[in-house]
Image 1 (cartoon, rainbow, N blue to C red):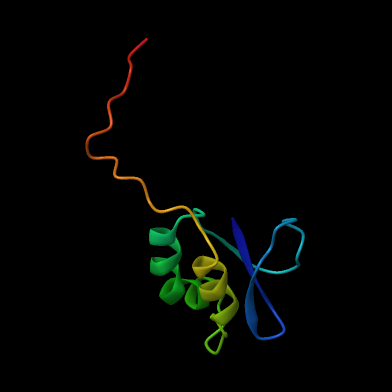
Image 2 (image 1 turned 90 degrees about the vertical axis):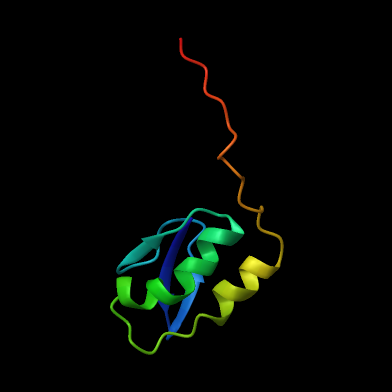
Length: 75
């Protein structure tokens, strides 16, 4: 999912069309939690309101899968 800065806020750019820098985040709770600190730096915005992203994360993102026990099929 692309996150961009718009009007001093970080917003989810569903259409991937907002101007300026964007930050890409996996749409999982774990990745968004990590991104809350990193996105302002990535977007080069020191005072960026991350409330919309935190709200988006709380409104039902998928929980991060536990991939430690995942098996891969070799073809």
